[in-house]
Structures are given as C-alpha cells and as structure tokens.
Amino acid sequence: MGDKKVLANVGPEMSGSGKAMAPILSMADLATITPSSTAPALTDPQFAGEFVPGGKPIYFRTVTTDAYQGPNMANFYAETLKVPSVYVLDDSGAYGVGLADAFAAQAKVKGIKVLGRDRLDPKAADYSAVLTKIKATNAASLYYGGTMQAAVKLVKQSYQIVPDIKKGGGDGILSPEMMTAAGFPAAEGWYATNASPHVVDDPKLASWVALYFKTYGVQPDDYAITSYDAALVAIAAIKAVIKSGEPLTASNVRNAVQTVKINGLQGPISFDKYGDLSTRVVAVFQFKQNKAAPLADMDKQSIYIGVAPQS
Image (cartoon, rainbow, N blue to C red; front, top):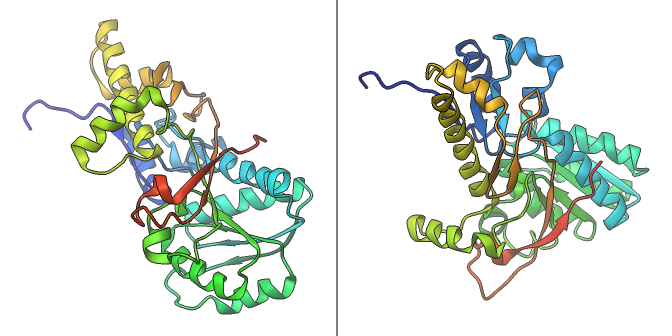
C-alpha cells in the first residue's frame, strides 16, 4: 500500500461488531462513523473503560441510539396504539437486549403494563411455548428486540398463536426478509422503527436516489442515506485537517470528526461530546402487503407512519 494510511473508518453495521472493534480503534485514536449500529453502551460514559480505553471518543454515529429508538417506540405504543399491556422479547444479542430493555423501561413509565420479558434463542426452531405463555397473559401487544434470525420464526409462529395483538420491533426487522422469509400474511401489520429520519422519499433527494438505483440496481433505504452521510463526515473531517495545516493523522481527523457540522442528506449532522448524533429522530413503519409489487420492495411493502414521539 506504500505510504497510504487509514485516517477514518465508516462502519460497522452491527452493534456486536462495534463492541469488538471499539477498544482497538480507541487505542489507535482512529475514528469510526457508524451508519446503523445503535447499542447505547458503545458511547455511554459509564462503559468508557471498556469501549474507549484510549480516552477520547472514537465511535460516532449518523443514527440515533437504542436509548431513543426503544423508548420512542414505547411512546408510540402508548400514545398512538394506546395499548394497555405488552409482552417484551429479545434475541439474546447485544443489540436486541439493549433495545428491548430500553423499550420496556419506557413502557412502564408511560403506564403500559409489561406482562413479561423473555429471551429467545435465535438458533431454536420453535417459539410456541413462549408464545402460548404470551397468549395466556392476554397481552394487548408484543415487542421484539433483535434481528431477523429469530424474527422470521417469531413472525410466522406469532401469526398462528397470537394473530390479533399489536406487534412491533426495531430496525432489526425493518428488512426485506420480513416479506421474503417470514412472508405475508404473517408479517401483515407489524410495526418497525428506523433510528433515523425517513428521507428517501424526499423530492429533494430524487436525483441522488435515481443515481443510487442506476449504480446498484436496487432502491436505497434510509440506512443507505446514513451510510452516505457517514462518508461525508469522514471527508469533511479530513478536509478540515488539511485546511488547518495540521499533520494529516488519524488523531487529528478524530478531533475534526468530533467538531464536524455539516448538512448531510438526512439534514444537519453534528455530534455530542460522546460521539452520538445530536438529532434523535426515530421513524415508524408498518408492513402492509402490496400484491402488485415485488415482495422484497421495502418502499411498497412497508408504509411510513411518521416520527415516533420523542422522550
């Protein structure tokens, strides 16, 4: 590679990967800008000894965290769906547990009765026992924190056992797999959140969306937007260091990322002192089958409901 050097990183996608990477990146003082990993612990000062051993924040996000994604969805359950009770599940992973914990805590604050809290084994094939337990509680709703590995089975089996209750989850289920693997009618009516604004339908981004489709052959989702914005942050920080006349090092780029203020595709982007995005918008979607569209077409098979009420 000659004299080429890494000055910043875009990623990772998942929080589990982030937890493995963060201590190493911290010791190198190398900034990473994630477009989609949302576990609060990665930037929570009480875990700084574990994830920021180098002392300075290196983990930055162009999405909000589950400290807002979970609670804001709990607000949506309380204020919009008006459910009196909920049963909360997670998939045992770092992302799912944190998201479900945050949701459950805020649900209680909002006066929703949390009738139970269980952990799923994503490798298990049968969730009928826990779903039968949920049915026996007469829970008005179900909330799931986790990814599609467990969700595919949960969605299918919950349709058989608790078909009529309200169901939802986080961005881990805002995926084409809800339609292609879990399928309709099982996925019908499920709610899901995105830890960023919903902007891919914004007319101002039409030319960018068209170029993305021309380049990759698929329609971008909102995390394509946050990924692009993450790259813009890195580029802006590198340009700022060059303009300052300081040496172009990873440490100086990290310092510049901390103070970046740009207008990305999603809107204004800046970070708090821990590396979290200053804006905390959580978008809500609902899966509704469109038989005229391909199953994997997220734009056509999931309906944008609006912004979840902020805590």
